[in-house]
Image (cartoon, rainbow, N blue to C red; front, top):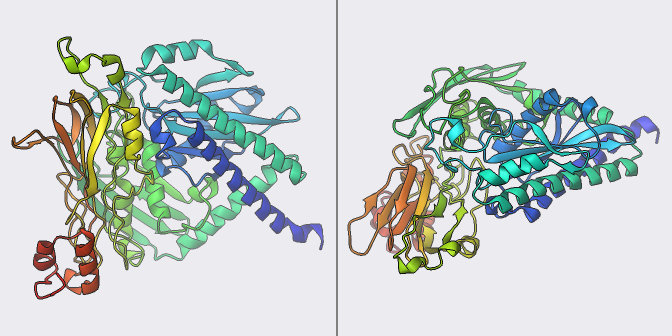
Length: 565
């Protein structure tokens, strides 16, 4: 067999190794991270880039918002520090929302890889650090200056020497400097893991450079994506979604144009920027909008700079999806994670057999902090033990799929996992009294949506604590399709003894008083199809499983004469 005949096989083997090493990069990040949201929920991204800043491969572990925004960020690093200026042992970082992944809590770290004195690739990774100072993670700020420490693209290590000034500034501005510093080491370590394995791969395949194979991978990916797009009916398709916003609803308008050159997404008509921290920098908008397309078009094609070039995303400058500095952006996910459902709504007439109903979309990721202490409160004798900040994740239901029910308590589109109850209780003085599926929360239909969940949380010693909320789908629940019903809206309230429940807003910071239980009910996903066409056996199964009550089986699904109910 001649050398040319071996080329496609060799390229495939190199591609498989690239996927393996970026996944090991991501797993290293999870194993070494200090922040529980990274270690337990996988709120991260990892990838390998060529020396022009093009993402060649990404780890499967991670979120689309991190991955696709990171794909655009490495070029910005190189614009500030060109490859020719970098040396072995250099590590760069930023958490600038417009150069990274959309808010200050996400740190992106970029590490160049050298072989025989030449830079041959770069590794990048992103993770969510629990606290960056300021008001903390939440939607209440009016400008990004209030939201925490903003670090422009800088050296974390230069020639292997740590940037002591940067680390001292970071430590002086965050509530838990040990965790922040540890997470930066974790990001550095995961890039080093990728670099080491890349050099081993190059030795195994006798490669002096990955430029040629990298260019081939990007070219093939772009061509494959264009092939998928050209199989779609050309035209212009529109959708509109209204969501809760902070103090007033937000309207998300979208127009998708499909032609032989690719897919163009335009968010003209979308609400203007908010005075609160729910604004979205354009890179995060582009990340989740392109992901929405990839859910149903070319989802088997590698997600890299080649395939991403086929989907082009724009939004009017200054709208809530293209907010400019110094807009507050901490809770950008509360709006940005709605975008795949907006995109899918545009594509319902293009690929109707693939498009699900709307889901909860935005993850429910409260920030819990230690509350105020009083000297005379006997419960706070161990006040130092009660100092904490944590960011657990709870999920609602996804929308029904075309021929299947939705997934319950599952994060779509972010893909992050729920933080285990045991971990939350070990790392904080909080106790989770209840966490269970929420009956009748799934939107009814021939195929129902996924269920939300009911969570009850209190302080183990009855002390007050603080919650910062970034929840949506409370006023505007997930809509069904083709006659399917909407999912149940979310709800947040307080209960104390026999007193009436106190309902809280979906966004903003609240004090949970002493001896009070916080209750969160996450939203359900929308249904698909006429509820009268639902298989009676599936209704029975849902009743037995406690997902649907007997009353709903009778009143919503019409099973009043079913003896098994």
